[in-house]
Image 1 (cartoon, rainbow, N blue to C red):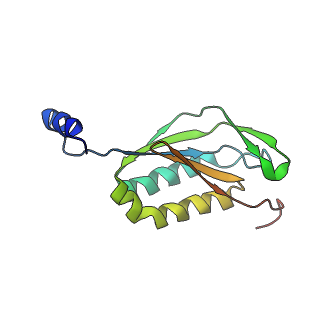
Image 2: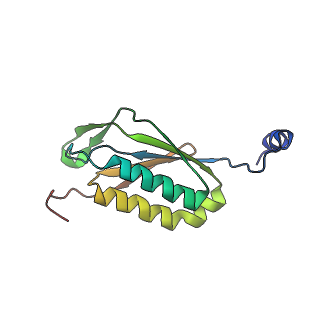
Image 3: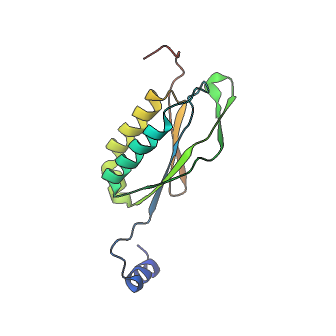
Length: 136
């Protein structure tokens, strides 16, 4: 924590100061434009981030698009929910395996081409291979 943040936290009487921002995108459709149970995944993400990092905030649906290169560059439009979570690098490193498992579960179970998240200024993406809709 920088000295200015430390001083500001002290002046406010803050009992907690976290400076690493994790941003997670919860999709509304799969890679074939079929709706997913977004409410369930938002709830599961909030629950996971709350358990791992102490809390998170979901924002209403936005509008987004991603290019599915595995399908010839087809654009997939959706309405993601964006979740912000403040944590520390130390805690993020310690909880990385559990966070990754949640992200992989969401990506596989909702048939995504990728799951994206931002940590501070870095965009990270976990990719999933193209598979048939009937695959389980």
